Length: 201
Image (cartoon, rainbow, N blue to C red; front, side):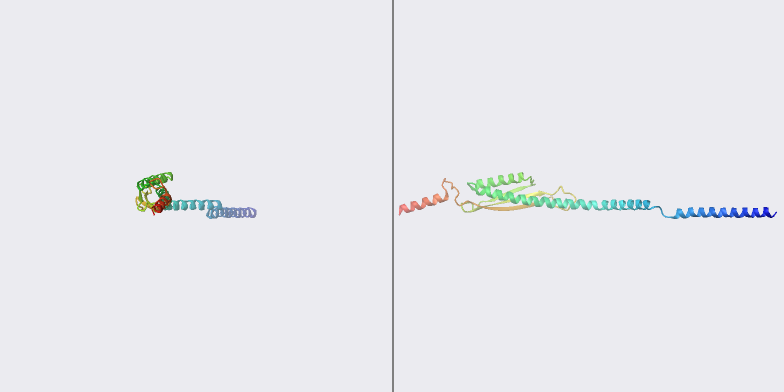
């Protein structure tokens, strides 16, 4: 009787011990489930979050970047046109200063200006060449003004006018000893006059 009771008691203890061990194992599993996931998953989630933030920032900043790029293009176009118009005015004034007559000077200045701007690939919505021949004489000067309207209408999105005028003026001195219309140089004509005056006296 004693041995059977003892064995039954031992069996009861072992059963309760197994339950405790199973409970511990189950509890350990639950605690593991409550722990945060591995560092690889954490890094992956952080990278995904940063990529989403970068994409959102790009969506918001893209229109501003486009407007800034168009503004830079407009400034570059105007600056390049101003440099080219300055050069064309200087060439036109020089061509006008070596012409024989004021009419030829005006025609030469216009042709030279158009050719210079065309060689520089400058397209003007409207081009105006003005030649001042009021002092067109040996030792005088000739002035040429060029006004070029640079188109800006293709740069949409900016509050810019359809075109912007670029103006340049150049003055060239007429050669003092250039050929006169009669075929003599200025120095030869003056020496001829002095000799005739001396012979008369």
